[in-house]
Amino acid sequence: MPAERREVVLTEEGPVLVSGPVEIVLPDGRRVTADRPVNALCLCRRSRRYPICDTSHRTRTREDS
Amino acid sequence: MLSATVPPPVTSPSLPRPRGPVSAAVLDALRGGPVRVDVSGADPYGDDVQLALHCCYELHYRGFDGVDDDLEWDPALLAVRGDLERLFLAALRADVEAGADVAAEVDALLVEPVGPDVGGVSHHLRRDGELWQLREYVVHRSIYHLKEADPQAWVIPRLPGPAKAALVTVEHDEYGGGDPDRMHARLFADMMRELGLDDSYGHYVDSVPAETLAEVNLMSMCGLRRSLRGALVGQFAAVELTSSPGSQRLVRAMRRLGCGPAAIAFYDEHVEADAVHEQIIRRGVLGPLLAAEPGLAADVVFGIRAYLHLGDRLGERLLDCWSRGASSLRGDTVGA
Ligand code: FES
Ligand SMILES: [Fe+2]
Ligand SMILES: [Fe+2]
Image (cartoon, rainbow over all chains, first blue to last red; front, top):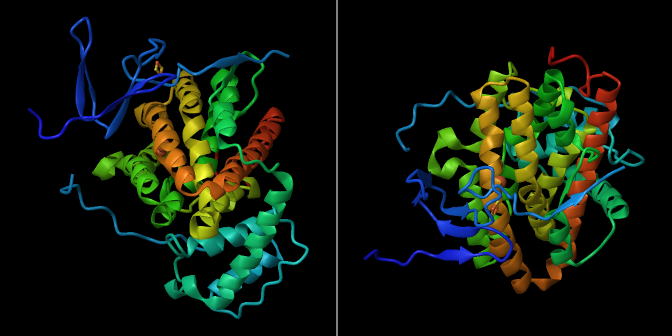
């Protein structure tokens, strides 16, 4: 048992915030490390750096001339 | 991490060249002359005032070569700084619409405009920027990024407990999480050298226009004045909330233009880091700060809008110069 429970914060709009360092195991077995004190992991699946959030979950507005 | 290689000795930058009577008078005072500075009638956004302010603020960061460090607390020079700040602040308060709805302001920043007609410097650089333009962009940014996170560090003791702890979490990340080689200022310097630019602190001050200095002066002003702590947090929030998508565009610009790994690494790091910093600033800093000091809401909005306002001014200058094929820098100092 770890001495202290780690906090995992589910956000409304996008990522889950996980305190690091952590190792993420993907379905294909690939391992990704996230070593920041706080890491944003993508839940929206739109990140180009999945499983790391890159703010692709944000609302987009089209601007046309 | 604590066993990092011995860094080169610290050197202070040399004094910049004056840009008018106000900055000339401040520079004279820094060389040990009498403090005789009259700011009345000066253009708050102009080169003269912004360079004078920059020089006053640098005393609090690295100082200048050959300038007495104790001038940082010289009452006469501090009075000059106060006069310059009143001028700058009055212009910003007049040009920035007041508001107090921080949540609405944040929501607006989190919407990403997309499409072929979206304006802005990073959009331009991603789409069809040229290498000389990218290098100029990095020169402008060097005034801040070579001391990245320093202006915001001034606000730490001014924040209540939870907001302070969260802001320090972000600052710690900006400072490399304890690893000097990962400090964002260091990553920026590595990028500069790879792009063939001089990474010594203050090297390009003479090359950058008032618009560039004004952005950083806003940070220093809000950081050094406790009364503007709300504005500092707003300014920091505006950076952290908008940086990630902008950094992604710069990564794509760098790749398209065939830049090397250090150039890509700086903005690449900011895509991921600032996706996290956004969350920490919103949840950990803005929320608790406004709960503890609700009266700061208007200043937070002011900080956000003032920063965007100055960013727009700089962006317009860059795009205007570049659309004419002209350099956005003063003189031909980069050899780009
Ligand atoms: S949750 Fe942020 S990119 Fe998917
Ligand atoms: Fe950074
Ligand atoms: Fe950041």
